[in-house]
Amino acid sequence: MIKTEKYGDATPRTDAYAADTLREVAAEIETVLQPAARGKATANTLREMAGIVPERMILFPLDIAHACAKVGVPRDDQDPRVTSRRRTCAEISEVVQRHWRGGVVGNMPSDDPALWRWRRVLAAVVGRWSGSEDSRLAAIAATAARELAELGGAL
Image (cartoon, rainbow, N blue to C red; front, side, top):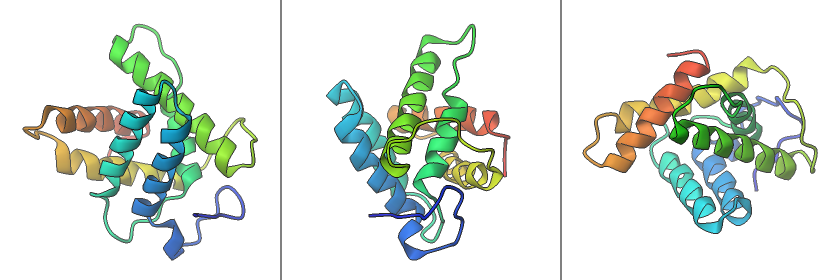
C-alpha cells in the first residue's frame, strides 16, 4: 500500500511511482464508486493510464485528489458528457481523500507540485492516445487534454 506521512510529501520514494499509485487508486475507486459499472469503468481507465506513464514518474494519491477536486468544480453551459466527467472527478477526489486522509474530506491545499505531477500524467495520456484509432482511447485523450488545459496547460 502507498503511504505518505502528510499531504504534500513530495519525497521521491519507490512506493510512490505513478503506475503503482494509479493502480492502487483504481482498486479503491472500483470498490466505492457507484453504480458498480461506473466504478469498474473508471478504475479500468486509471489502470490503462498506469500502463503508459513513464516508469519512474512520481505521483501520490492526494495529487490525484487535488487535481480532481479542481477539475470537478461544476461550470455553467457545459456539454452533458463534460458535466458528468466533472461529477466523476469530484467523486474521485472525495474517495481518495477519505481513503488516504483518514476519512477527512475538505478543501485541498494549494499545491503546485501536486498539480504539476498530475499534469505530467495527463500529458503522457494525450501524447500516447491522441489520434488513436480506438475511439475510447481517443476520447480519454480528449478529456485529458481538456483537463490539462484547465490545470494550467502544457508542461
